[in-house]
Length: 356
Image (tube, rainbow, N blue to C red; front, side, top):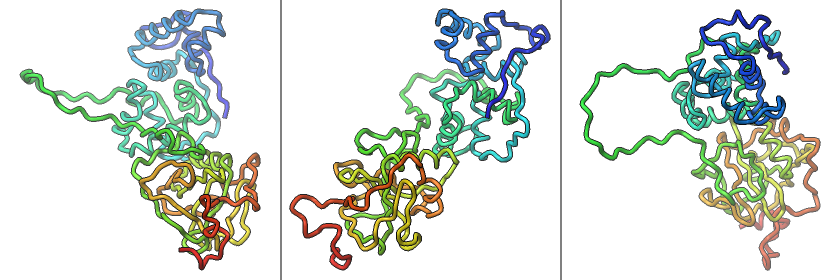
């Protein structure tokens, strides 16, 4: 939703001892509007170094160390005005997003922000990462998101942005020794080669320890139902799911040979012939061959793209998210899981009772 950012009508009435120069004021406006230093320099025909120097002077003037904290101080001190969005309701936003948003301007280095928010809110790291992804999913900079927070009432200017300081007694300096340092929380990166089809968006939390719920050979309709989807439909569905704040995800297998994604559900929860614009229920009684063990990631045929965190997929979730108009459904005629060369007798079209 658009909102209005501008310069105050009377700049001389802004509180505080430090006052920016007119050029610095324009740089502050660009910062809160979400412009990078390069974008602001190009728009105003200035050098990038000059714009960065202006931002540095503003940080010194407002006693902050990061641009995120500078954006908050700029709005809080009425150096830049943000017009509230009429009818905005903070109570209708996801609770995790609100908590994380209120710490987005905390004056800590960008690389430490996620781990800092984990400590400040008590939320698990994966929920902090998901909330940050949701906030940033529209492409707005963190500084503009801070302005948007003021516009919709999430931020008020009274939030504590400095890490709490504890008073301690002076102790004699101990001799130096090697002490293991705690590792700051970071979202694990998805290793290369673990998702050959690119079914899972980069923002999807990576699960380093596998806990697949199936392996080996299974018959569709008995142990599990399978919804086949194109890679585009899968990526779109998972991205939309994250943006909507969904917290329970089911497992997804990737089939490299068939170039399709396989969503796993409990058998019988979908009617025969179920389909959407981007996916369809695979016929029951087929043999799903060679599901890898949960510890095996990637590969050249069937692989775990995503193992989920809430059991099998719920049918209503699939119906909601597997409907991208631009994604074509997988063909009925194309066999999704071709057997290895020379194994025609084990083809997935054979009757279910012949599955080993």
